[in-house]
Length: 422
Image (cartoon, rainbow, N blue to C red; front, top):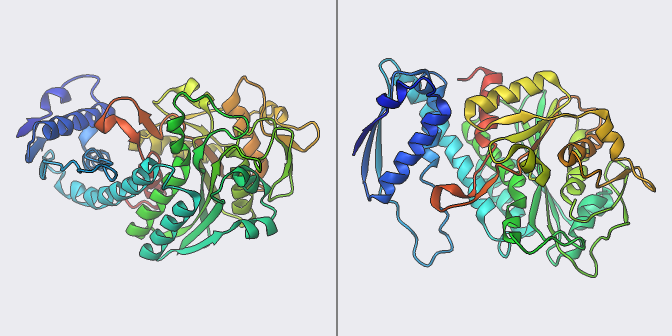
């Protein structure tokens, strides 16, 4: 089967996003029709040249993903080989991009597989075991904190959220690479979120297995960076909990003390993500990274604001904002910068404690981001990415459903630009 994209390339509005969508549709059609061999002829167009080659190849390598581990009969992909013909003069560029795209696709697969794994298997303990396995395979330093150790470190946020589950919480710390400046990643890992005592409606609660996708993204990033051996020193902090209602659960009106000593008045136990991130961010900040980037499916308000087309970016640092926005546009994992105005931080001040875990209904995603800002210490270059609308898809079948692995390609693009590697 041979397809050309020349006709699309003559359209005035043709760009990288339309090319990526077209490639996904072609691969889906080829698989559905039982094709074993596919030749794609790319246009002589900016959307398929230069740095865009990395996006094209990443799209091709990730589009055939299926999560069928729990099917009694796995669906075997019929498409075995893809021949890609870039425009004249682009062969060398595509050769280098292929090496990078393969690493990205493996990181995306790690993230998607973990995100799609159901909560009866993907408990906090199991997720920590996956991190340990990844660390052993890729030569990363790995530390896993148990509840007793978190108690000693004053991590009341993680312990409170995990108090209602029979599966105790874990906190994973990874470190690898060399260099004086450290880039740290933090990822929210709520393996299942019932809302706790402030229980969620039953409709669509099955989607709450995806509340661990921030953690899954960070593990996918670790996989990709370690495989490529990208220069730099990196750390990852991954808090893992299950938020369940139980006689031991934390309650509305409880006051919780977090790792940096700040106290939080609980108004809603379903605002749990910010509580576990408070401890993880405070620990990360105490180890003085040069840059701190955090991923979380934090608020439904972000989805209301941006839909499923972009993740929300919060950062007080203008250069960092520009770098991440540029990487988002280049990788196709779009970001939209949202405000961190002081009024939002003011709204999160508590009545009987330093802070409260729920602010006004209006600007809910901004209030949540402002809350996190109380736990980054003196770190100036920090960013919170609310990926609630982009971490998974809940409509349709095949390519459109399940965890997306959003954030892996974004971060690699950002770091490649910083290091001038591609």
